[in-house]
Length: 147
Image (cartoon, rainbow, N blue to C red; front, side):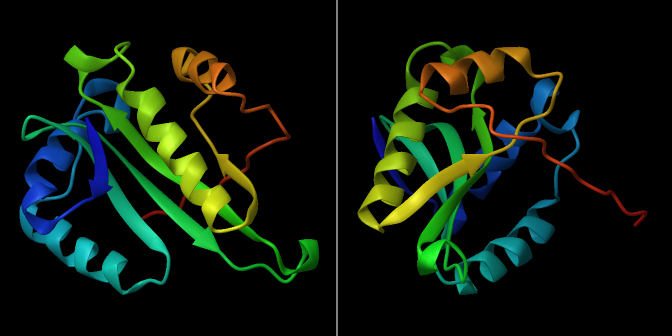
């Protein structure tokens, strides 16, 4: 299995991963909307969508942003987002390899930390992240807006 930066032609498979019931309740962008967002993501410095691929099949995806920082003596930090593994491949090490790749990328870029957030109801995800060495550090707050 390889971890690589996602290409435009990967978008349909990435959207299929995000349509899984435990992700976005089956709600995903259209292909045209995804292309617009993908092009915008590519314009950001040090923010990429990655895929885990084996034998030409995409098994999982995640996004990683590495950001500069005025606090913490200017040390960078990483944020992992939108982690998804195809249901038939969950529990087979795909997610672990993706996360270990993201962690290594952050170390290579001299980040002082990498963080992520996950929904409170995703208890299996919490156990998974803890098994990788992530610690509960505090509270994650969000505010949603009407569209």
